Amino acid sequence: MRAFLGIGLPADVRETIVAAIARVRSLHAPVAWTVPGNLHITLKFLGEIPPERVPLVERSMRVLASGIEPFSLTAEGGGAFPGMRNPRVLWVGFLEPLELVRQLQQNMEDALSGAGFPREDRPFHPHITVGRTRGALPPTWGERFVQALSGERFGVASVPSFTLYESRLGPGGAVYTPRCDFRLEGSGKRETREEKKP
Ligand code: 3AM
Image (cartoon, rainbow, N blue to C red; front, side, top):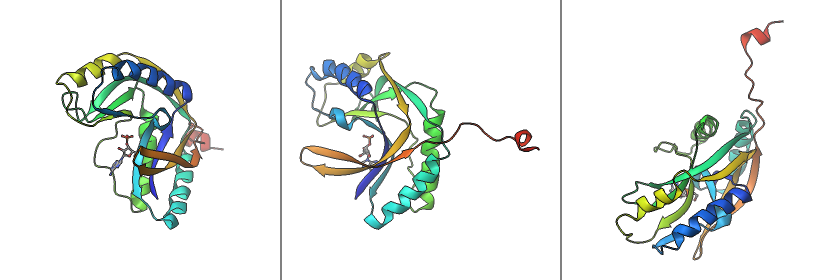
């Protein structure tokens, strides 16, 4: 199956994003907007994995999740990859601090590279893809998109778990189906040498 690991978003955050994007959508640019139910944060794209490898991925992700504490992320502002002047992917971003989501993604890369999945060579930039361009945009469109979302808060997403999604590509766009949830069960407390002393 074609799969990726990601974080689903609460309905209120998705709805707030959709409402903000509606204003930009009315500018009628050639952009394929993400359907609200598909809004998510990708942690690791796995590509096509044979069904017999899925249990290995799940086991390794369960171990990883057991050591990371639940956290929350505040969705704010927007941007474009590779840049505002030549936007291909339009996104909503997050406020710092992002240590815990970075740690989760880094541990995931480490665990999965040990299982034979190639490491992502681009730096991790947590984001929610809200649209993909499908043709030439007016020259300042990307800047206008970013300005329209600048400083806007879309709510706080608590992240109690992450998810293995199956992604099926179809004529109407990708359909993401959650296959397995991994609860974050770390305590956030680190055992120090002092605590270990009798
Ligand atoms: O969260 P976003 O939208 O940035 O772009 C795809 C999407 O990321 C990405 O995986 C997420 C779920 O489909 N993706 C698709 N093909 C990819 C590839 N070959 C990829 N990421 C890296 N390499």
